[in-house]
Image 1: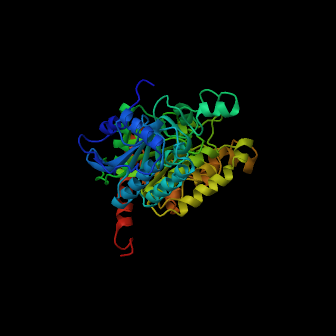
Image 2 (image 1 turned 60 degrees about the vertical axis):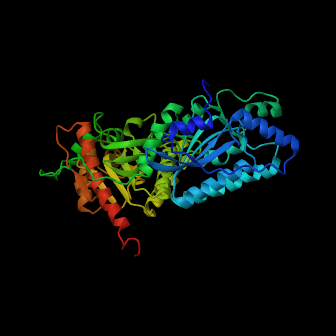
Image 3 (image 1 turned 90 degrees about the vertical axis):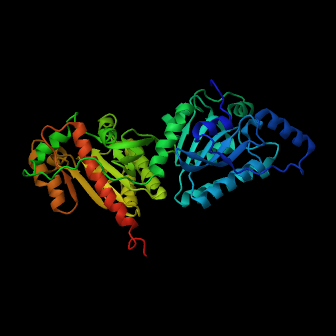
Length: 484
């Protein structure tokens, strides 16, 4: 660690200059043991704060937010009853005022000098945060060095978006305590921000200097209203629909636009969320907060570039997808799913990881969501892995995209005993976007040109999506939709 940022430095870094307004009341130490009072006084002098937590309100690029900031210099950032009460009251006030909460931790956990009564306050902090989330309000957390114990096991692990300081120690039990209790050192490299990001426990590792930009992007999606769609919309295709096998071959080309191109060329203010936040990560699915041509949404997309015979889309990828669905529902943002997969993983590991159950749960979640939902059939739509992200209120498809229960080669083997009949099976099974539109499964088809670049197709898809999202959002907020 090159520099340990203080609470005041962090508020100055992230908040608009001069915008911080403290919510903290003086701490009453009159009833405490004299020795503990002396310890608190020494800690206050060392830290330049009256407790291990500062709370208040400020602005991020003009947007009002509530902040909760740990100060490690005050008794190792430990949380006693006074600090816990500050956090709880700040979160409840933020909920009442409709403000996002930005929290940053740096703590050894519960304050041992106060024992069990302080330990139990972690429950009240968690209760307040879950009420905040239930109100549809964002909670963002930045974990600093070190974040351990009850802090990591409560308010450090309950955010919608969680990032951490590079090289920071983050863990349930501090390594020194572990070694003292177990008689051996904790394995090196486990309790680090980088390792937890690799395992899908946190979303990313972010340097403090980059934190203001990240918070700004996240709030642009979570707080700022939609803007008028600006990208050019394509006219419907004039030519007859393409041959099914031609489309299958075209969507398998390496240079075809995928979800990454859609985000790169058709979106802004994107914040990637990596992993399930429960210890799994699969790069086959991308989850992001983003704005598609000005429309804020949670995007869940199958990344064809990360799927191969050796790295197929497994159960963890679908659990990541469900995390995105839950976030959209809780944050009351539209959900956009992007389908582009050669199929879900077929293996012993996938079966034991509940691949079929995860497909079922994705379908069940999407069919019961109350926020606007939009599915984009971008390329390959093969099997249950594709169906898992399909059942949205509106489905947009590119002209060459397709959907089938198996790869055409697999269907050919079942029907004819070999793969040579794949082209005719693709035609017979009515897999084309045009067929799906005729059947009512697809509502909008984005025309494709022979000379399409990945950028051009991505822009065209984003333009169509933004107009659909704008209409769905208007419908969802219309008086009749609200029961007025």
